[in-house]
Image 1 (cartoon, one colour):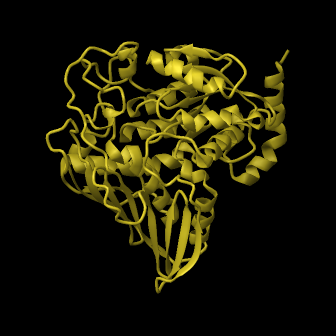
Image 2 (tube, helix red, strand yellow):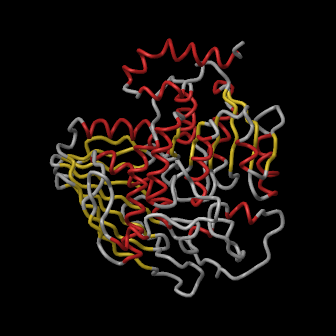
Image 3 (cartoon, helix red, strand yellow):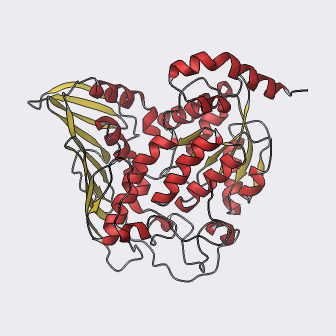
Length: 444
């Protein structure tokens, strides 16, 4: 006999077919449907700074979600997360060290992958292969090849994969991008994306004992094994070379570049040009660029510029992050708080800005956009909404970050096939993927 959940899934697929086709969802999306009122059992993998993004939507009674696991390779983060959720839910949650044990539990329907960058694509692929829906934090992949693998996994395994670029679920951003597409500023031709922060000195990465409670072996996961160095596991992996992180491009540029690409309706660039270097605290532990200017040239004479200053807090654009979209008949300033619309003479026509604080650059998560984005993930699993950030589309934005990083590392422009996003440059292709610890290679 079918279980209740299996019965609801099959019934929903049969009943929803016409509606889903009208929404433009592909046939293989039918396999993703749960019952519209079915409870979704979830697990959070990675309990660091993004934990706050998931607390409210999981705890909401209307979400009809059960949190089964809190999983992290650092013991104290598991305990801290359990205390946090104890203030929001009235049931016990299992604390787990190993993602593989979570994925082996057939009761888990979906996972939140909030691990470091080198775990994003391998963890997400492991998730869908285990039959789970996946919400994976940005950037979603550590390198260009992983982005291709993740997009393939999305199609092959028939599970929902949402990227954690939450501005795609912001009402004001959705509204103004739609209006841009409908001609409110004429023909959009250029976007300037930016991120400004005043990050301080970073400790030099020196050999050190593994911190108490940390499973360093599992933290490294897919990455080739190295001895532990001071403070690597706790955020500074972003700046300690390319083994685990993707620099500020994967850390923050992904958010802004995605909005720019969305507004201009472009796919892949024809050429990428980058000027980048380490400009601040030259003797500290930060080993990659902290300042970058990148320019993406697209078919149709469209351009996206990136201005990233990680350690110089000069308020260049009046906001810590955001986009300026230029069109033949006007301009739009848009960030996480809303937008301002200007005519071609520079006069303010419309102001839809709210002082929500979502445009800030402080570490952490939690807020209305995060909640909307997570609820969209749940509703997509149930077949009630289309995903706002489906991974096959979002990997085109993440790919912009990888291309800029490649251009920076190679110190030369890259010529790209705008139909595929690939390059014939042999040096770039040698860095297209990465080396993996034996047995950890992601396979689709």
